[in-house]
Amino acid sequence: MNPKLNRDIIFNEGFINWDSTLYIVEGVFEMLSFPVNSVVLLGKLLSATLVSALQEYKPNIVILLDPDAMSNAVNILFMLLNIYGKDDDKIKIISMKGDLDFDEIRVKYGRSKMIEVLRSARKLTIEDHFINKKVNGYSGRTH
Image (cartoon, rainbow, N blue to C red; front, side):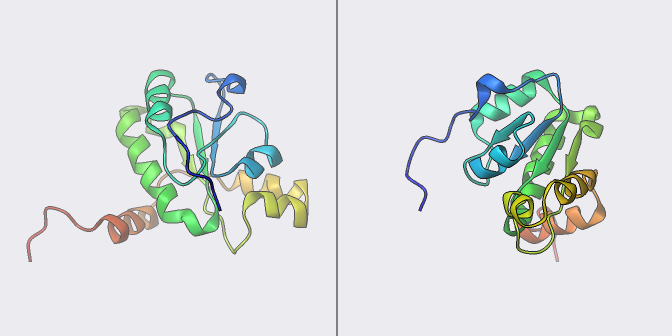
């Protein structure tokens, strides 16, 4: 079980290069598996501190959450699209397939499979719109 703590921090902040692509991962083990400029959410949500930093620096971003957190990843994607405005080409998402998270892929399949997963990063798709609507509803519509 995760301990109760203040998560309004940027985990690993001292090692982040804001001028390089930033990989947003869910947990510490994913960061340790892929230590190249990754920031840990310590959950499935962006902290206010991280949002402020992203607004200021606007790095290229790849969202890489666990397979069970795809709706959370899409919500983060839409939040970042609002922050980035016309710079939306800087944001990509990876749809993790199956049950394995990124660290489990490293352990089970090795670096070549990790690289394959990273190369699957993509921009917003129509599927993301439907996931977002399924989770957040269709506001503003009358029946």
